[in-house]
Amino acid sequence: MPTLEAGSVLVVIALEASLDHRDRWLPPAAGEVPLDRVGQQAWHALSDLMPPVLVLKDRALRHNLDQMARFCLRHGVSLAPHGKTTMSPQLIRRQLDAGAWGMTAASPAQARLFRAFGVSTIVIANQVVDPLGLDWIASELERFPEVRVVCLVDSERAVRLMDEALAGRGPLPVLVEMGMAGGRTGCRSLEDGRRVAESVRRSRSLRLAGVECFEGVVHDPGEQVEGVLRDVRRLAEALGAEGAFDQVDEVLVTAGGSAFFDRVVHHLAGGWDVGRPVRVVLRSGCYLTHDHGDYERLSPFGGRLPEWEPLQPALEVWGLVHSRPEPELAIVGFGKRDVSYDVALPRPLWVRRRDGGPARPAAGQEIFRLNDQHAYVRLPPGDDLAPGDLLGCGLAHPCTVFDKWRSIPVVDDDYRVLSAVRTYF
Image 1 (cartoon, rainbow, N blue to C red):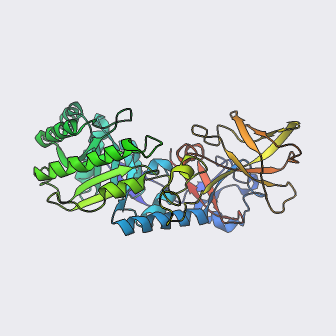
Image 2: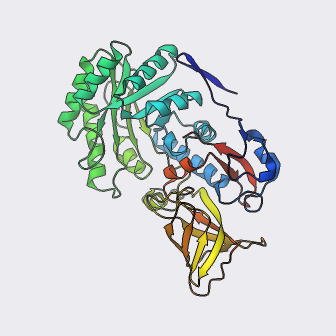
Image 3: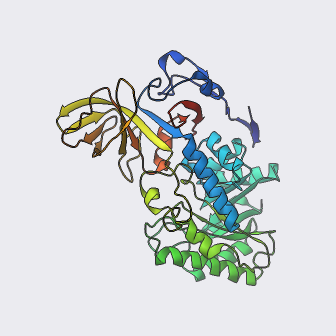
């Protein structure tokens, strides 16, 4: 059981903790099952587990891990996947074992949890103006000199607030964040970025370590994405020419998102001359599981990069057909408590009869509404879907799927359960 001292509290994350009745897919007769013994139970996800059940397909996970690792290696960039997608120590460990340089967190609270998972390099992809969060970061860096935690700044006021909260502690490495009009956070112009960088250089407790952006807030890889990536490069080059990075061993230039990482590589990988080595870091998180939604449509692999195989969707939810109240309507036993619905509704993929046998494609079926625990499925004329059958569906936006499950079984291509992962939301 790994342990980590964090501040005055001994944080213990039981990576091998047991499954029990709180894991709602667990067979009722199973009792308590150690997480590391799930694969020894000889369970089949579609016959032995309580529906609805969310599954992770191991072959897809392995394919996606390998694909992104090879892409980063080929282009000479590093990977710090956004861990908020899964919040799972087992999946984060798989990403690190596949070559990830570090992990990305959305907040100091997530970063603290990742430290308990054993992660030593963390990018907090937000501006941190929370005094308690800043105190934790400073304490962590003081206690563990080998640990690297960086965060973002996008305003002079934030720099002042951070400097006041740290009161001379540090220095805390920060990245100037560039943004785009109508987007999320980040400086809206190169002039703003330069002012923020100068404010960091005058501060007592902050150290300028690089430049950052998040380009994934638009759905069209057009001029907005291209423009913000060009601005990142221009700002980093201008600051480097001024000697702004003389206090760091390497300059971090990083962008996030699972949709446009090919454009990040195009604009930022290679050709740097800023007086220091430059580490370009991708922060894509959803590549691990991919989806049947926006990432399926927007991912560069197999699309803008046809020489690379597409990523494979790893998440499926399976639910029982509860009712056929009308000729072209079925009600299935999963809903908003179980699946994502913020980007798109689940997509029917497979039907498995109650008596077993091979699954058939769910041709012509469409989920058009979700309640808390029910899915409304529109059926084509003559569809023989019946109560007791199982419907397997693909999901969009992995980030809002994982948070609904305390644990998730990992299955092979025949839906035999190989292992399980725990989540910590």
